[in-house]
Image (cartoon, rainbow, N blue to C red):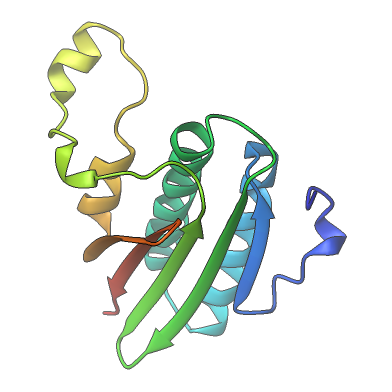
Length: 146
């Protein structure tokens, strides 16, 4: 398992983590490191970090059903004025188009937590793309730079 931080070099543009929420802080460090390397502002880094955190949480909970035996590959890249973060897993397939827009007022009224991950990603990233490729799921988050 990849739970020990020293086993992963966050300076590389691609890392693989085990499907455990214990690794989310490492993932945030990875995004923050590359955000600074790409000369992003704090808001851009925060948006990307939150989106990747939400995406990985969804992968852990839904694709891997909270099993810590899965792997999540995260690759970050900058091309022209865009940041691309690609997340790949081999968990259960997922169709984000079937996720309805959440009723935030109703969720607050019912004190219902969760269920806002895809909504948040779509609101704070410029593009969110999902592809099922063979046995893999691929989620691509794109942020246009200001």
